[in-house]
Image (tube, rainbow, N blue to C red; front, top):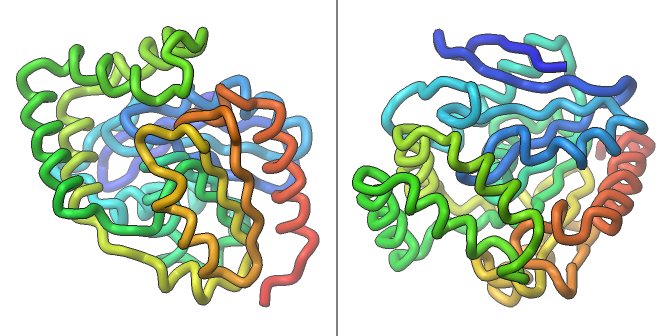
Length: 265
């Protein structure tokens, strides 16, 4: 079921499927909640699944010219407050993971578990910040070409049959929303300390062939939390829920069950 609420006067779209304990799905850049459609349908057989269009993506309106990860996290909290849900597992893909770890810093009392799905707690390097600036310039000049080129690098297999589905989704993104998210990602701080002192289980999912987030560079963050699980997808790139749907769904479902069984420390 598609539903709507508001955050700072802007419309926010979200989907609400299933019953029971809640799992929140946050999409990556420059996607929207439809990226999770098949995945959330399966997960909703075991949980109540909330997927949210982050500000500036899908049908959610922009809330400024810079979408800081903290502001997006506040939007997520507004949706969950609207639904009167207090404790849940948050799953963030790529940029959604940046939002999820910002949420963990702001609202730790609401978390039963956290999944970083092809994501990172590290800040951008100086080189990556320059790349974000180049992306903003490209979006302003040729937005369609930018998102097509970007999405083509997300799969390990360039001929992956899901590429067309992904491109149809990202081509709906507004240039303003894309630019605001790029600027917000560029400004985000490192949040290793959140992992180190987390009082809930954390699941890391990586793609061994990820061209966007190098597994070897990201691997050290898995040593920070005490209660963690790590899934490495040997043949996946940056889109594990498309490239390895059965494996990722199985592990995430088991992880969420574990989160709701365990007591928060």
